[in-house]
Length: 598
Image (cartoon, rainbow, N blue to C red):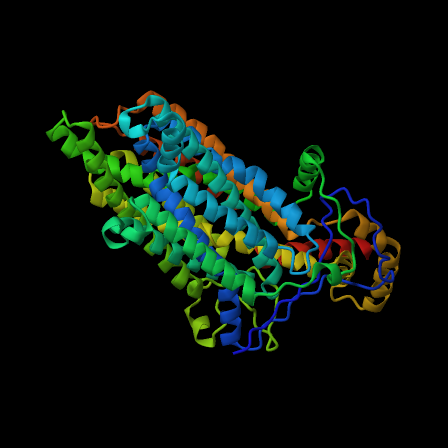
């Protein structure tokens, strides 16, 4: 079966300081929107193409799941306190705030012959593999160096070696997050660039499904007793998980890069490379790009900023939350456990916590698989030849399942409310089963978080590429004509207005490339995680009890406070406009201008 190849043309990123000579514009009345890849010819080819395009999300999520489920227990096992651990996890949002938008700019401006995004996918994957292996074998690497150079090791009880191991592991966490964020930034822009017109909902829904599959594989592996089953991959559970993540990420990214072709950016539009700005100009131009974000993207970023303050505790502390509930009866029954007994108890508790994340992943995947069949497409403007919308479900039988009025926006809002309610219950739950159910219910929200915002932004980017300033000007004048008999006269006025204002509008309405827009969106996800990290550290400092002491419920309170922020995000989500609302508003403005003209 032959695979359709996406060949999008390239654009220059207005975020950069463009010291290059731009090619001459087309004629004043000519429209030259960015070309889009042709849609695959059949449903089976389209599904295969989109699957290969988004396959990397599965491998990437396996790597994320290892860090999310076993990162905190691993750091705690090295001797790090909860309050310091919370500050360590600032690595993810901090690197996300800086790395993702910068990688977006670099990839937008990349002029290598094999594409703009694929070089960063490959480079980020190699970096992720190396940093995961360094992190997993931190104790062995530092211990070996200390034994070789100084003749001491951690096993002998050297405090200096233990501190060195912790520092090395923390550096490893930062390296892992930098590399993973590089892959994620390139992968998101890769999907926006290469998904055929009208299929952003389908592509992002598929990305969510593959993310769910990656979660399930990662958490199922974490729940298994891997040292007994795969001893040749490592000595500990964490080492074997990191090895599995390295293989999965390498295989999935290799398949995507091999089968999905990008246009040669040197030939796509004939524009030369632009010098990437330094750190100072980068931040200045980034703020300028924030101010000129498309309206829907601005609204989505507001939602994400509030929501991710609440998502952060779920992602990083869920396994520890379940583990604390699990160990409580054992600690009450035997409060004088030795350190070895406490560590064995928490290892078992971590596996139980990983099972809760596995339930969350299964719920998330089920939501991503089945919910799109019931959602009415409302984002993409692409049309099939028969006139039907190319949405997330293009099969004729699936259209009968759609619930009228259930759009992506409304499904997203409902999932946010559900998440807030679940988090409010966390401090009051005392059984592992009930806590697991709460984490599982949150999987519905997580599924929508992997789908809805990206689909909304991706659809707006693609629609803006086709919706040139000249086309908008003509549409405004056509709307003002309405049903009036003087339509021809108004059309003449429209043409005259386009001739007078077209070039000026084109100059004023520069738009940023997908990499920059998605990078700014990722900042709206990453910055609130920094807020959540600092807030969590303060709460842990005030309320946490020493490891192995009964009655510690600090994580439950952190998750409940996160629910408050998610509930606030619902207010911003209600302001997101969908296609039908935007068209109605534009028709209203057109009727108003028409009455003024008459």
